[in-house]
Length: 184
Image 1 (tube, helix red, strand yellow):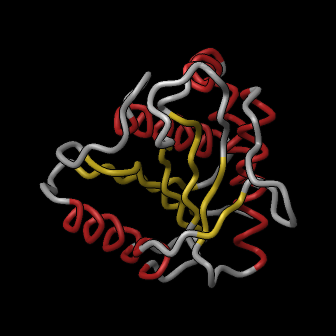
Image 2 (tube, one colour):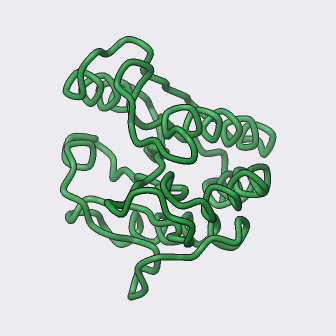
Image 3 (tube, rainbow, N blue to C red):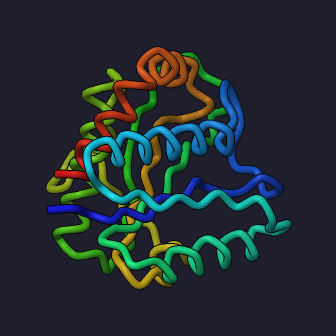
């Protein structure tokens, strides 16, 4: 069955996200574009949004959610890179996906499978064990306002040298794994 996936990169050109060993906005855009390319090669529709206009976090969120809600799609995915409060570290931190507390089991399952796919293909640590491995609940506006149950994928931690090394070395495999999971 052909799927339509709406994918946005986290934050925006003028509303920067986390930075450390890599820059969240730059890397999220690369992942989104590559995953979209891979999805299309698998016969699916990938709709892409990068916010190049917003100047504030509130406007960025409005633009991103507004774009997602205008799309005829099966799933919303926003690609981000995380950062911990520890500053720059050498140790591995890992990958996780976030869903809104009201997300249904199907959305939690997709989020868990996406996080696991990134972990497996990238050699990254899968965070958050439990019923939905790799998934945590976050009461974000993105999750509350999107009309579909969205997933926020945190590919790795920008402040972890090990995460960024693995991500850089296995970029193609990570993106292919995300696309395969979205297409499944």
